[in-house]
Image (tube, rainbow, N blue to C red; front, side, top):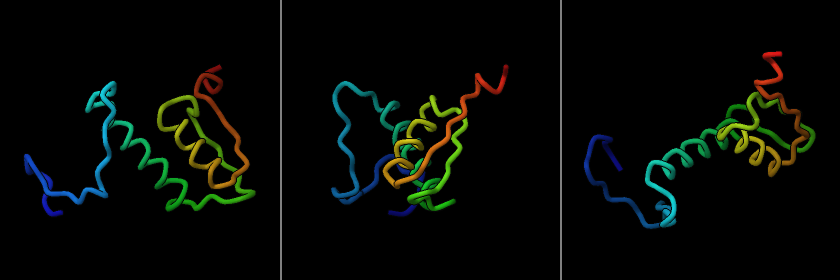
Length: 88
């Protein structure tokens, strides 16, 4: 797949994700971006594995909650910090 400013693009079926009827295109696009960010941070930026300590700021947010799920699947020990606690 080349280019990024095309109205249409040919993509292999295996690379597509079906969007459920009750989710808008915008919601689906946002979820995919958050999920890719979480995966990238946990697997590429700093590979998380069993025994790894992870501090997630804003763990209750969209990307933060996905990072927690991806890190848990990678076998980490987690520590969370919510923004509200930092403001007090």
